[in-house]
Length: 202
Ligand SMILES: Nc1nc2ccc(CNc3ccc(C(=O)NCCCC(=O)O)cc3)cc2c(=O)[nH]1
Ligand SMILES: N[C@@H]1O[C@H](COP(=O)(O)O)[C@@H](O)[C@H]1O
Image (tube, rainbow, N blue to C red):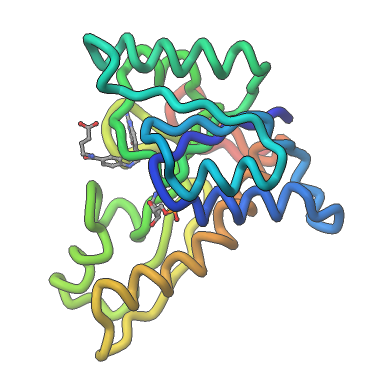
């Protein structure tokens, strides 16, 4: 399967996906053919270039509306023959139009055990809530933020000395295992999004 990855920053999840799809022993069944960032000069773009993957910067500030930006992103994905889209630290909320076009082929990784701690700064939310276990979630993307059907979750213990930074780092280690695992399940047809928006294990 041809995969497109949308980023906005450092791209450590992108790197994990690049490394996994290129490891023949992991049989992910996917190749990353395009990386799109809405922000120029981010580390994620350099990671893609180093890996010989095509990159595009589409600045959302150049568009009159959210939908117009999304349709420009959509056009690039279509032109590259992308079949599955992975959001990896992509920080723009996608319009219903885009989500509907890619429904069932659009996934995201969230740094908490959804449905807990939706939205931004999920790691900080977990620390403030005083939970002793958090983690990460790979889910199908729905118009409602962080509410899509869950594909893979991984738990991460919260240590009493944790700061937001140490927790972010520990959760990222889990993300880098969970995301490739979820992409493999989708790319190899082991999991689908049912018409009832629920997960469907084949
Ligand atoms: N429709 C849909 N689109 C998404 C886009 C990105 C992410 C990644 N997680 C995200 C979750 C929250 C945000 C957010 O609230 N950002 C500040 C507002 C930025 C803006 O104005 O766009 C961004 C990404 C998830 C979703 C999702 O679940 N559904
Ligand atoms: N989607 C969230 O945004 C961050 C992206 O990090 P990176 O992949 O750009 O390093 C990660 O924490 C991920 O959970």
